[in-house]
Every structure is written in structure tokens, then in C-alpha cells.
Length: 201
Figure 1 (cartoon, rainbow, N blue to C red):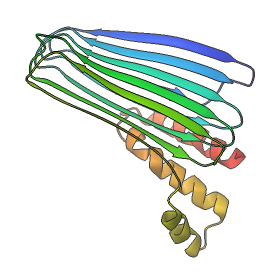
Figure 2 (tube, rainbow, N blue to C red; figure 1 turned 60 degrees about the vertical axis):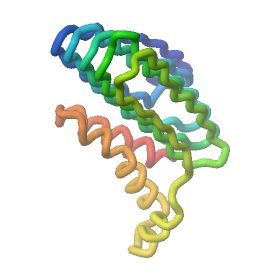
Figure 3 (cartoon, helix red, strand yellow; figure 1 turned 90 degrees about the vertical axis):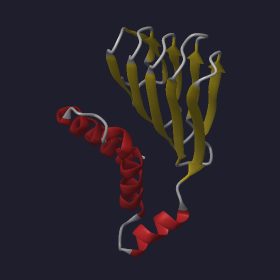
Figure 4 (cartoon, rainbow, N blue to C red; figure 1 turned 180 degrees about the vertical axis):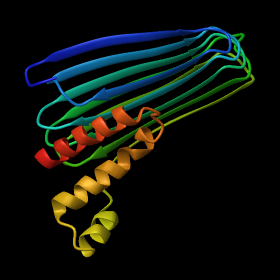
């Protein structure tokens, strides 16, 4: 999306017995973007993988809400959201793992990471667990931080410019999301958009 656009979307996957849902959310454009992504694991043996990456610059505001709802036993969900914020951008992540009373043997993970390229950028992250079963394995975590100065120093000491070093670090930072996307054409397209975004910073 271009400048001046407000984008709001909601996607919900209803996953039955032994079925798998794979989703990918990529947020790069629009002034304001809100995405709600939900996986409802209602069948025994169901699973979901929820991936996302985002890169905000200027004064963009990105808002992500996720729900991993385990309603059946022996289900698995894995969420990995990674983002990059520059300039005066803001991002909000609110993620919930919900495990119903009879959803025993649930295996759920939620990981959210944000890289700050500017001291004026802000990220608010709210990982949440609501567990009503007693035989589960659930974990969540979130980190927000600037570029590692040692990594930047290493790349600069090898002759890379500040801009090139930053591009390398951002691309590498998002790579563990892209490495899990099986569609090569989409990965190459996203890598091109990321390169343009870093180059414009």
C-alpha cells in the first residue's frame, strides 16, 4: 500500500482434525495498518504455523493482533512475528494463546521480536497466555532492541558502508521468518521489498 492508506484486515483459520494451517503476514505499506490473525484449532491433531514480518519507516503505525485458540487435545501451534522499526514509527503486537479446558497435550509457542533502527521508534508488545488445561506445554516471549553495535562494528570493519551494513543486518534479522516460507517466488519478492525499504531509510 502507498502513503495515505489505512488498511484493516482479519483472517481466521478454522482447523479440523489432523489438518494444518500455514499463514504469512507481510506488512510494509500504508500509513496505518491493523491485522488480526486467528487460528482456531478445533480438531484433535490439528496444527498451525503463523508467520509475519513487517518493516515500518517514516510515521507508519502497524498493529498486529493474533490468537492461537486451542479447543481440542493434541494440537500444535507455532507463531513467529518479526519486525523492523525506523524513524518515528510505532508498532503494537498483542498475541494470545488460549487453551480450553479439555485441550490437553497442547503444544503452543509464540515469539515476537522487534529491531529498532531509530531511538524515536516505539514498539508495544503484549504476549498473553490463557490456559485452562493442566497438561500442556506453552511458551511465549517478546524482545525489542536496537541494532547490536558489535555486529555493526564487525561489518564496518570489513569495509561495508553504514547503509550496506544496516541492509545486511536487517535482511539477516528477518531471514529466520523467510527461511520457513516454502514459496521461493514470494521469498524473492519480499527480499526485494526489504532491500528497497532499507535503501530508502
